[in-house]
Image 1 (cartoon, rainbow, N blue to C red):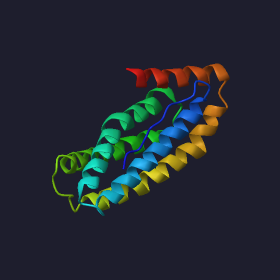
Image 2 (spheres, rainbow, N blue to C red):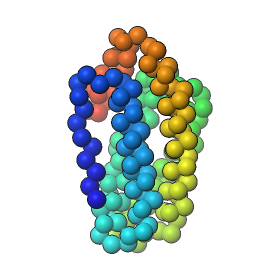
Image 3 (cartoon, one colour):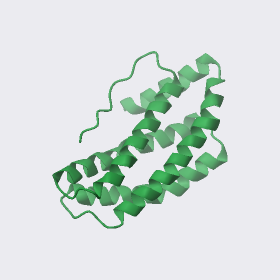
Image 4 (tube, rainbow, N blue to C red):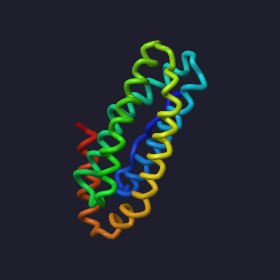
Length: 153
């Protein structure tokens, strides 16, 4: 199952970019929970997609929040707390992608991350996004452009 990340429109606001990121996080963590149900070639493909997302794109999203957004300490603390589990998820998915068996630990890890990330994203959407929307348009544009620049590297 390939997931197309799609292209962005030039006029979207920084909050639109972040909402799209959150949807991708939800998509890929849900995909991780489904890998254990299929140990065949689809599991290898899905594991590769999950690995790439959480090894490449997810760290960019976290860096965007840490460096560019006015986040409360709770969000930073969550990022730190999630990192070891994300690293384990990436390692397990890499092994499956390379043809290894689906580890029994993958299902509970993916379910744990799904619970934790769902809560984390909800807090950001409730607390951080309204604060971003309240910033002057020029500041929102600066943040949006910095996020895009980080992706272009």
